[in-house]
Length: 117
Image (cartoon, rainbow, N blue to C red):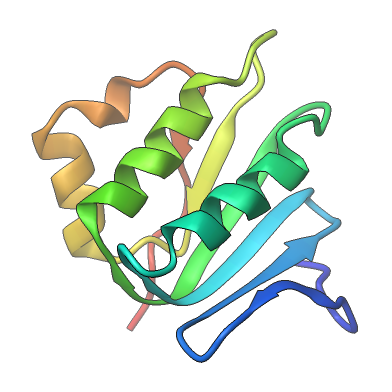
């Protein structure tokens, strides 16, 4: 992941989102909840026009609520032309939630490497 020296798109007490260049996407760290949804939405809009696949690196997430998870799944569903959003560093319990509700079959979504404790 190439985010070295990158200026965060979002930096609050709860959430830090940094654009990564290789592979293109975002590194999301901290807490995504009702208070930070707007920041996540704005960051996703920044990379929405990226050509090709996009990676969302989530190993730094401390908490992701259902609304934030829905936002990530919906973002993946907007990718066209066979391009994907790959969620990497996802905590095992979040992978389980995604599979339980059937979102793992969402067109445009790819579940990458999981978080290692």
